[in-house]
Image (tube, rainbow, N blue to C red):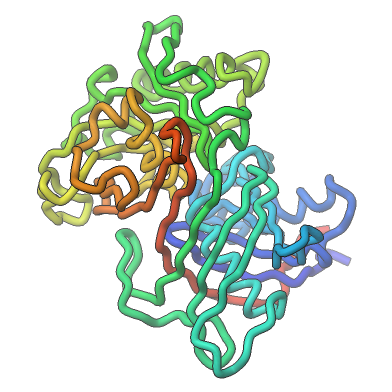
Length: 376
């Protein structure tokens, strides 16, 4: 036998795309399971020409879904980041975009009961990567997840049906603390000493003043990604911050996927990669994100959650740069990124010292369902 097959779906969720599996369809053997993931995406080639990835981090993803054994929870899932040109299957972090597709998958695969006459369904989801509960509201049509709609999210055309995602008590999923280094920390590397905010909300992030790395908002991502010294500085800071936050004992042990990294700027007028002018009055903060060693085309959903929360936490770097607006403490934070504006809900606990919830609206759709073939 030259190949074997396994049932698989391909979903887009937000600005990410990945392979979706029922846990019941996968082997218990972890080595074989990982080989299925790596062959399906093609982690072996940088172009991922031999699989369903496309050579970029936000399409090199896998989700595995099953009914939940937790009382009152409909489904649970685990997210995996797959390597690009390297044999990596990493479940250290999660994906804030692709999680929006878990609800539609649960509907279309019969994991939650719906009626043909229902126009929406509320789904409770547990994410095993960060140990957090999600609440999703998925629009329906004819008993299936609705796809078409008038909700536009930057980075995806055409508009689609809005899926509402909220994550409850999102802090400390990986380190046990929302701010494991305190409000801010100092990171020393062989290339310099830097002030950072390490915020562990949904996915842990290292935030830094973009000016400390000589970056302005007008610099194109392609130029930044081809600057080896800048990328080396970022990677050294990222790894050292992870060690100081207690994620690993040594810098060599730090995963490629988390913590992620973002450069923070004050609201300012700039032009998106598509040529649209974003006016500083339209946004509360500007940021560029780095994931898997490259500047992100837009901004990862997990990063949007984390950044919105960080703007509310007094004294952090995002909080210092963010514009203050009436009702800012529990309303929508408008984040300017390379392809537009993302609006994220965030609220603090009554004490004001931690994050109560974060929320984001996304679109998603199933692209294909069928047999995924894996070389034997």
